[in-house]
Amino acid sequence: MAEVKWIKDLESALSLAKSENRPVLLDFFNPG
Amino acid sequence: MGAVTYPDSKVAQFINSRIIPVQLLHDVQPYASDYNVKWTPTIIILDETGKEHHRIIGFLPPDEFIPALLLGIAKTAFDRDELDGAEADLDRLLKGYPKSSAAPEALYLSGVARFKVGHKPEALKAAFERLKQEYPSSEWAKRAMPYGLL
Image (tube, rainbow over all chains, first blue to last red; front, top):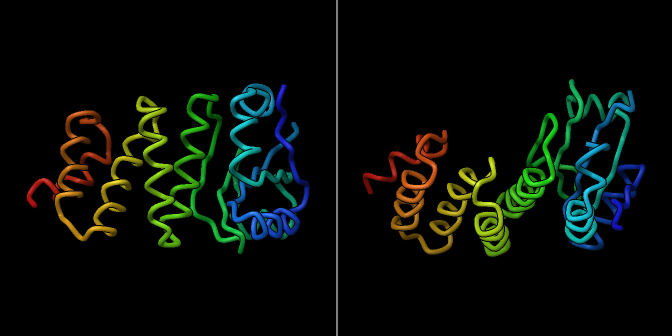
């Protein structure tokens, strides 16, 4: 079963977005 | 989102294949202030520079979330004048999720993208005619009304 492979820091995500030429999904969440 | 939508296998496969997913606590600084986060869930589609192109606030079920992400990806491409890529994802949205809440905006944006590529007003008029026929009560049908006069 597939799971979302979350990254936990934005700078790493932006760097990966640049190298893979993909946009970023930034999810601000409240764990409750 | 974490209980229903993200665990959905189609959602997870879509995200992992099309977009870089990053998850932050709603109050983590400076990002919560930079992106003016006031409620959760807040989901923002960014380009690689961190510029915002699309925002989703509140819960969406899987069959609404995938087309909402497709719209965000298409808007990112559109804003960067990558019109072929934008059109391709808008077509995917309209063919795969024609009953979704994102579909009327996708149809509007598709007409604009086709106009910007071909410089033919017929693209805008065709978008309006489809909006009038398929989504007559949507706000996007209203926004496209002037194109009916072309």
